[in-house]
Image (tube, helix red, strand yellow):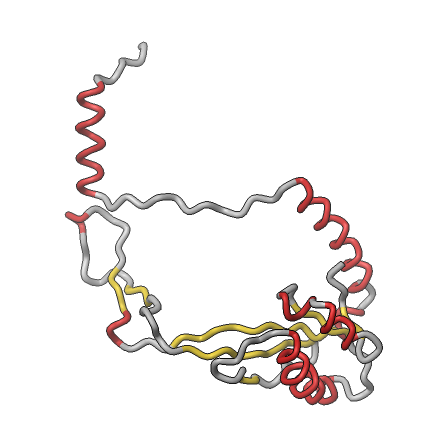
Length: 183
């Protein structure tokens, strides 16, 4: 049996009906790795493997910051990915962030034997190198690292945020603690 050609008028009508019945969303662009990114990841992953093998991973403290937003009950939306004719009241309700909702930033970390305490970043603070060194590394990490590793034998790891990998921050950490370089 040979496939039949679809009449363009019928195809247009079908697409119009589908658009009417279903909510059409544009596909979001995804991050694509370039050849340069792949080479960098291969190079870095081997170094990270060597740094973590033979149980050395038990000596790492890994930290990050995160924003938390406060929503009120008006911030819920009913999102259903079904035909409009088939809406059902018991489908899931997803929370969304409201415009101008208040939020706060928290810094914390994990290690093999425990976790750091959560430390709240000052409201309105710009987390630049100076703030990161004075309020996070000197104040928070020092206390938590000594509690987690009293002998001081640990390796510090954080993400490559600009305040973390700046020359000022890197120079501060050199000689004071072992850390994974972002190079």
